[in-house]
Image (cartoon, rainbow, N blue to C red; front, side, top):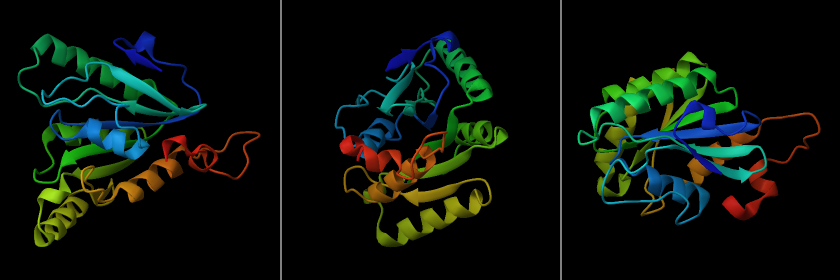
Length: 203
């Protein structure tokens, strides 16, 4: 739909949207493409930090996925980092259509300070938070169990978590079902079908 560099450029604050956040090298774009079954919806790059706008994608009328700028990449100039911080703060503070936040994080790394900051942004507004522990295909079974248990323990009561791999398909169906449920916001005139069921184009 649109890429926003300033809050005044956000799309109309109607309907429902799920935002996706994550470190610049966490596999966020690949996760978005896997969730929507669109190989090039979000651009992937070998160079972290390529998402420099808040990008709004319409899944169907009044149902959106929002790609937030990646964080934690040291080579991004400080003025741009500060701009992103202010942009994200404005988004979380004022966005009424935001219903949930998916935080994408490399399963091989612990929750970082900026992951917690994003989590707290969403929880301060009473929004649901879900962790996608990506690149799970790079873990053996024992490490996978340990990683998932640790993430759920650390975020108990404030977020849910799952293992995810866009390459192997691990957890993609589970995450897509949650995305559809989050976007199923009842409005006057809505029937009982979910957006994902009425429009198979995104899964």
